[in-house]
Image (cartoon, rainbow over all chains, first blue to last red; front, side, top):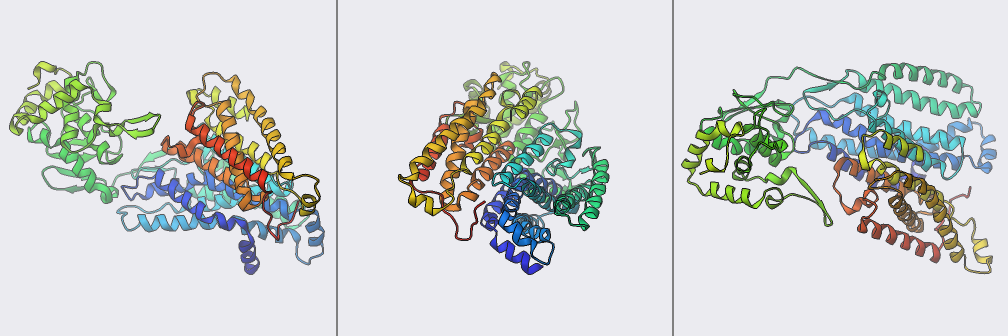
Length: 432
Length: 176
């Protein structure tokens, strides 16, 4: 049987799609995860999301093969063979779908090879990764079923598009039953967990769908064993739907003890972020360093899982590691100079341009771009904003003037005016 | 297609971009319907024809594309959308051109692969990345000149391919 499968694989035109599918899988998975860190929690959901495209492609290939296998001349020929004709047709479909499955495995192997050496905490969610692999087969076999029941050269591609629309709608509308779609689960953070066992219930669901699709074709071809297969597949599907229907609610897990690096500022963070932390730490420390030197912020920073909460009298500097060094610098500068009644990051009308100038100066003196968080879209395309895009001439001139002051005078001014800054009570007259 | 568009617009979650999935994905199905009819069943017919079949194929494709474009017209009933029927027609001609060019290399039977993989990929990738890059032209607004140029250029290339030569046919490829 393996020899026949290999022959069918080799005959399949889907082999030419292999490099493109691998390239696409690689691209989308790396687009969805944060490449600066090696986080296992992001890998499973990213691979499941990629099924949104590779699943329909598998369905289209298999559907087209099914249509070809049901040509009248072949039907007559197959009736004369000793083995169940439908079994041979299944092998033909497996030949096509297996190339898409190979693309999934090759990409998975490559991503694991990149992530594993850098990962410092946790492990891959085998349930999700297995679910993704089975989802490729399920989509392929559903395409096969459609092509087998309605043989036509457009059935396969149209079934693929239909599957994409169904999966996309489940994703777009954030419905409770979105977990029935492979692309349903969202990207997780290391401190989050999806409902325990959900990945394995998805494995059961995709297996049930695949078995049912295969057995329906067998049933139409009057294969006796198919009745039992359909019964088994249907029963499994019902159980899986009941288990998956409550959705993919996430919950926080108990964080492990944080790692603390000593230095000018002690920086503590979740161990999963160790791989990309040097760049994040450098950006954060350089941004808040003038405030620590002024004695207005404590020399201790603690990583937060979400956006850090604003507090009146912080016991430590809170920072979020997401978005790369520029974003970390912008976020920590905004956090340092904000309170709940003074929010420069949401363009609070009470915030003066003088306040914005100091916030942006903190980012600039750390060597980062305050416009990094802003995307400009114009006729020439999309680009990261420059200083001139996000700051007016008056603010830029103020930043320049502040930068030109002697270091001691700047630190002294920050020490004297920190409270006024954080409460939106600074105006141009206060500036040196 | 209209039902999905209605669902997206009525949800109020997507604003003036609610038609993007319909306008990017719907024309793929229409383009497949056009491309899959271009394959000539036999060399004998080609050789025995009293005139070159390229012209007939050209007329056939243009006629079908016009009919397919009519399917997209109901999308004009949704007002104030940045991406709607005009972008749908642009995508239809672009995908059709892509498929017709591909049929030179892949045979008519497999010519659907590039529009399907490219269209689904463009929406999925751009949905995640929001880069605004011209490579994802099917997701661009109705009045985006670059996207129109790419779509029309692909269609022109496809028509040329279609007029000059019929889609290749592999030796062991059976007809339906």
